[in-house]
Length: 346
Image (tube, rainbow, N blue to C red):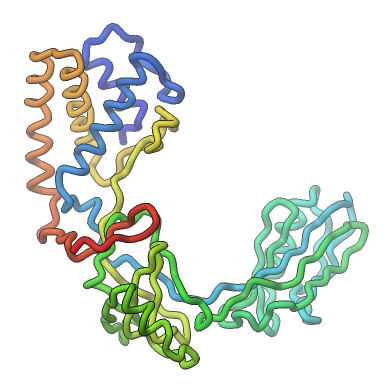
């Protein structure tokens, strides 16, 4: 699997330029910066030649319609011995027994979190530790009912601070769900919803202006399985009727073009280890030959340009024969994320 750095190295070598082979793309300047940018643009150019490249077309993407789970925390703040004796939530013990100090507060927090997760209480809780902070979460389905539950830790020698449960939102009280940031187009014709694959049903799209003027003003007190959806200006899905439980939404989409660097030009090389995904490693030289086309055009080197174009052709032929989806991607029936929201292409 060729990395960004390896692709740049190979492009420099094949160009014949009098330039020392780079050891990193990070912070590249001068002539090396140009090679780094040519490789970047070559990979983008290849991806943009067809919308139907299989590595960009994504079938059966899913989005979870679910509650926001409340959390509470216990932070171990000091001590080099002793134990965490117990933690209670709303008066219910969520540990099976004390956990002794284990060489550091971070190790002790990890052991406490594992204890909570392994222990069964009513209601039940799980926990995770990051450093000295133990984050406690209730079992799914409790939504906002646990908000305000007191978190109380009991310790010996070790000191701690507690934060009560908060942030839970019932699924029927959530209005919008965000689409993934990696999505270029969202195909609203393919949307279905289910809570098990046996009851999956398509749901239909309504334009946002109709949603705002009609459906969003209806009585939303009754929740059930959604029958329709809209896409809001800030790239989120909203459903009607409001969901009454956790569901999964299935849809098709077109993923964004993969880039090696930041789009704003602030960083020429951001990571040596980035790799192009979607195409097999034995075809990564396509990126090198496309980059060499840019090199040759920049320096008006006709012979090198002809060589690069000739060497790129077999890769392009292979991609078009083997890497294109069987069906044409119709983006006129999709939403495209733009600055400030999704724009309908129709």
